[in-house]
Image 1 (cartoon, rainbow, N blue to C red):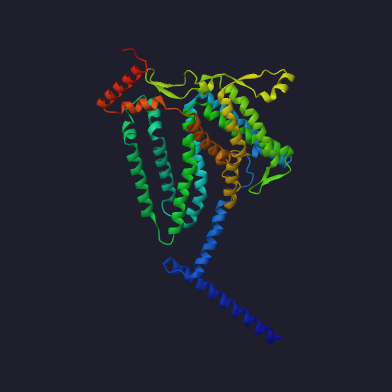
Image 2: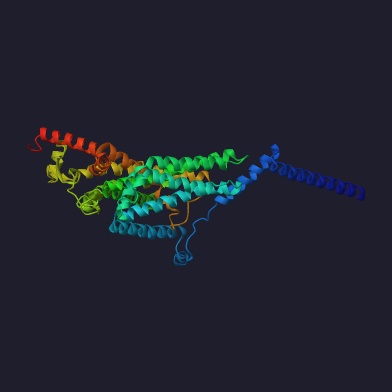
Length: 458
């Protein structure tokens, strides 16, 4: 027995020695990789370790709630607890949105830019996890640099002039406007060269991936915020109505799904149901039409934001365009029997914008939710629950604005395709930028044209 035990101990000792040699070999391989010589086994081990650390760095606390709120709602079931928290902060956000509308367009523009920066930070923070693991140089600085550059490129021509008005110095930023495209190009090339100089051996693929990551994030966030503000300058109604429709669809879909939801809608978002999707869509169309009719009655909402040279300030007064004036519409003759039966007149008065709002409400209720599904797929890909925890019961800012960005693009395209007319203010600005002899030539051409058409008497 003793000899068998001795042999077993010797065998165990030899196995331990082999394990130690293997560990030492891996350590030497790891050291050699640091010197620029990688073994295939070390590469595999290193990738697995970094992947594990990467996923851990992305993990977020589940259902993180303020301790005071948790204490107040401790007696409610978890399902109702989340419902109450979500409802309370929904009302808070809606009230805040109404207050910003009351304050005016500057407040709305400012909050849009703040939301843009926060959404960028939340998306790019997923890339930061890779940055932290591999120690990639300058990734954070480059990301924010490209954010500033892209904002200047998109907002430069019109937005800088707007802020120059606020500063009461019309020529204060003239150089940035005059040479806007050239300065934008120089800024981007500077960032491009900066990125190339920051490339680090063994991390080329990751660095180029993060470079693409930053640009895609800029496309998603900065471009959409530019569309939002452009829509705003066409009249606050083009901003408030689409945003309200998305909010309405989100709230009503949540309520219908919470109380009646039984049938799963899409695997990317298991809590979404067909009942919530359909109920939210119908409610959005009805409430959107009513809200649009109400908004059309106020100049404050329907007039474009423009700069008055006489008053030297931004104004929102105008003679409302035909789009925001009541017009009579004949109802289809096929419904004449039912109209007589219900004592409904055959003609109704509507604002034409209400008919356009039907297209907006259909998009917000049918296509809009896919912005949320896209965000859900993104979060599932990186095993995170929310983009952040800024808003209790809702998650991060990006969790609330994923559908808004998609809606902003649609509204901007819709305005350009079916609504937009030449902007007098922009034409005047271009005329002022012409040389004096060209301005005189333009004046003579316009005078001749107006005289020939009888608008000016000779």
